[in-house]
Length: 318
Image 1 (cartoon, helix red, strand yellow):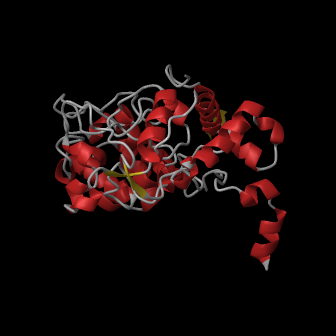
Image 2 (cartoon, rainbow, N blue to C red; image 1 turned 45 degrees about the horizontal axis):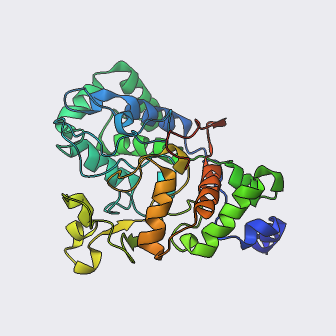
Image 3 (cartoon, rainbow, N blue to C red; image 1 turned 45 degrees about the vertical axis):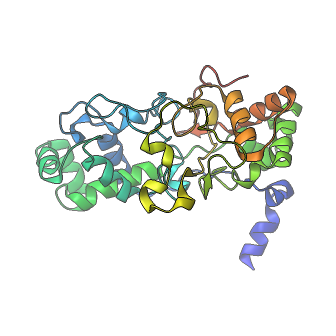
């Protein structure tokens, strides 16, 4: 009964739309979040003290690093474009291949991966225990010195706080009709009419299913070289049906997260929409429709710590 009353109190538009607003992050434990943020920003989590989590996930921008593909510990290029850390906790799986279900599981893999942080628990924990700020902080928050479990828990607590509510589109869904222009509303209607909404829906406007990249057209046809990253989930499962299958990315803050796709193949949001229309929907969009959809996508930029995120990167507009 209580649920029915709560649902009835929601604006009618919010109840009937396939996208739902993002709510502010729940306050889990501020002491743990503060510890997690310190760890997230600390290059000492890497073996040589040269990179931090923020090296690939910049919190002052879109939660990614702005590169087509991120740089590995040895200076080479990784197989993937860095996904945004903002709203990552709302995804059903993590990473482009969806090979992790929990933030803690992914964080440990990142710490230990020779291509990423390239550290070990035997090396990392003495560093943290020897730092008075961490020793005191973990004693207060966990009642113990830093250990594997509470380091991963603190990182996860911080990452779960990285949600970006109050995008203009969220306000529109809640009944603030003036939050969007007529062009942006048209873009949203086209986004639904063309079928983009089939994969990009829910709170995170995506992030909740797997899909093959290249249903109607092969997006790799003109590509001279390919990497294991292009194989998608096939590298995990070995199943032919998983070749070129990826976790559908969230479109929240998409205007801030160029370049796009698993390989960062374009820095233009308009070009990304065009590629998706051809490869996933088998459609060629009129320029006017493309512009309208891009206008709608720009309304998905939310706020972090009650401040609007930065303006969109160059290339997001057509």
